[in-house]
Length: 280
Image (cartoon, rainbow, N blue to C red):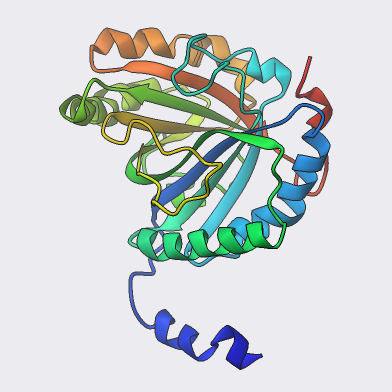
């Protein structure tokens, strides 16, 4: 068995490279199972792919799945979204943290393992990738300062909701201005008295040339920011006061336009909870 798995190389690899706990990178993947395949997709992802296609891979050290019931899907905006067409598409989203400085190492493994999973018939085909991208960490803004969980705890802490916000700037320089405005001015104020404990900001990176053909190349590499709002409550509880007008608030800055605001709640691992609430 040692010869098959090249066990001797693992000790060598463990002795080199960064091994901190900061989420330097993320995989954010929003997927729509095809109609009639919701239960089968959920079981495949939870029983096999979440582990074999994600958590078992080197340097991907935390993960969490989230779901948007039909009621949550209908809260999304804008209606004409550059991210999701229609804006309700993508009822599941998975978020994963990758150790800072280990993106290239992880990508080599993930491309290889996904080729193997495809060859072995362990990839569920009746699904559409709506918004799938590896992303680099840009900033984390906390509501409670040094108190409370850090961003590296976010996918293990029992947060009750996630709001995914995607903002596009006109160009790279405008994105840098947008990021600075969000980080230093807007979000610290917005988080006061907010159900969100933190906002983690990422920017997308291009997928490798040997990516799987069913995953489209990433858009907005130079212009887009992805914000993950981690909530201590169900997003519906304080939606109107905190999230219903994000497009207006960002537009007023003149620095970007909101292309998606989408609320989710955590899945219940090992169950089909919420699968019957995905459609009308």
